[in-house]
Image 1: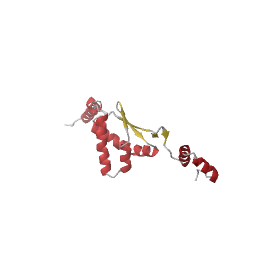
Image 2: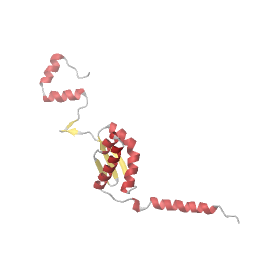
Image 3: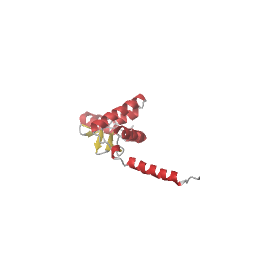
Image 4: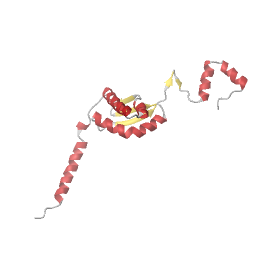
Length: 151
């Protein structure tokens, strides 16, 4: 009585077919809206706060846009972009599981913050130009004392 070995292979192929059915199962693509997404994000933020991951928490608190099944984080700069790229796989898995939707996409975009219709002032030259516009006396002081902005 020798049993044939192909039987386990047949069972394995049947298991593979069942796995394929599970991955294509529409029950794993539960619909969600921005409100549900924000509540799940708050849970994730709370978890990150408990783990003292302050930078990651800041990134996750940024505004979120939902288009279909694409979740887009609106970040302030490249530093937040770098942090987002590091935590993206973990956050992606958490969102997929908690939203019960395995067809979501996670993305980010850098948005420059505009205050009063003007760009943010980063460099000393930008700051000086802004102040010159606000107070013309600075132009006279710069000329009189030969002040430079690069220091």
